[in-house]
Image 1 (tube, rainbow, N blue to C red):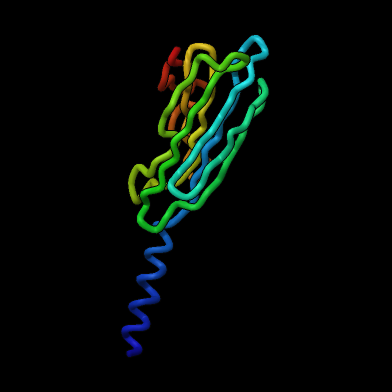
Image 2 (image 1 turned 120 degrees about the vertical axis):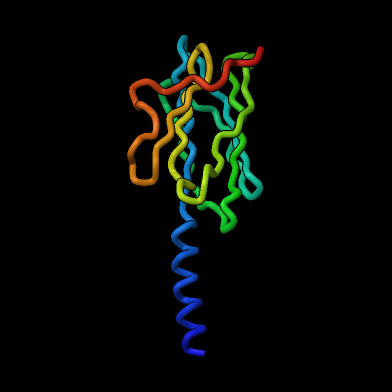
Length: 138
């Protein structure tokens, strides 16, 4: 019985190592005083809808589920008429070893850009030059 309890304790420690947190940041870097409409959701959470003024951002941190299947979907729309929009996966677990971090999305005039940040604060991509991932849909 004692060996079984030791085994369960070690197993629990190993499993907790794989469960961590993640986050999504949505920044409005649009020009011409355009606001940004945002709504994100996962299986368990709904964020928004929210209006993000120009030059500001919204950050949401969450815990990744036990099975490492956490995924957030987002919709962004450019103001003031909100005709240009984009629907996309804003966060998903990449692997068990790299399952957290902050996914930093930036809405710009020509599209939506991404910069990922690991749990320890180091950037996966060049923080000066985020990569364009999506164009706006008209």
